[in-house]
Length: 370
Image (tube, rainbow, N blue to C red):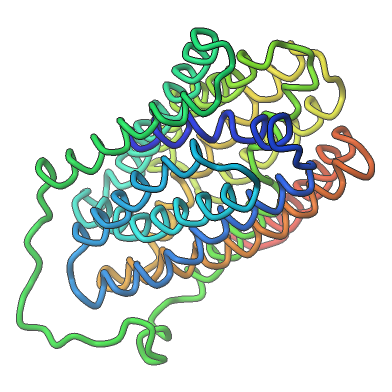
């Protein structure tokens, strides 16, 4: 939660900072966001495998959170998009290092019959931070007359608090000792990852292709004509809905067929894209963003649960790593394409394209036998 407050204080303003202050295009925003998010997801494959090899999760998580916290000052100091890209990449490397070990740690701790609820709760707490961050950003922007860099400096504080909390207040459960260490990404180990697991990996990639970077939600809100200082409220709204829905849908996933819930999540994403494409008025944008948040709450914790359910316990870090590797490549492609469509054909066409891809994903999901 604390790290999300820190990150979202910056990320909710960064597209506006790049376009308005640094003069970047929507394509540049898409490339930077796509590279950053895909870097985080790709790094997870190595950190996840390393956590399985070491049999330890917490040390990698601490390093990842610390790297994320220490890159925040670069955003405040950035004179151009090159430094912004560097800061985003380093920040997302930190996220990648901590992500798979953290998810594997949640799976290690949670009882199997409550795993969906556990991931839903973790996602909700993440998202509480993700709406408090933009809310703080709005307040500080109004207070300091749109001083982006001052807000970026304040974002350093909750990031450091997150590292301190993890370092001194979180205990890793004891693991069995005496078993020989093996390389988790050796061929014989990878063969233990079932077809059901690789299907989940494919589904995650398709969902990522259909849902490009949330930076484009911020740019769409800017087009609605509201004051620059208030634009981050779009992320507050999205994450408020996300936080409120993640835990209930996580509990629901423990009691219903996962494929069915995924399908409904795609239906909600299609509705969100169509609403966002239809009109640029702030009320319409707000409705589309709220639907986007419901989709996230329905699907993100569910996909994490499905990975845990289909992977061997000793390979969970590796399993999350490969899941995020494939999703990372998809995120890069989706964000670059979204930026190109935005610059060449306009915002509406970008969201219509997302809806079309979501329909194709939904048809593919229904075509697979349960």
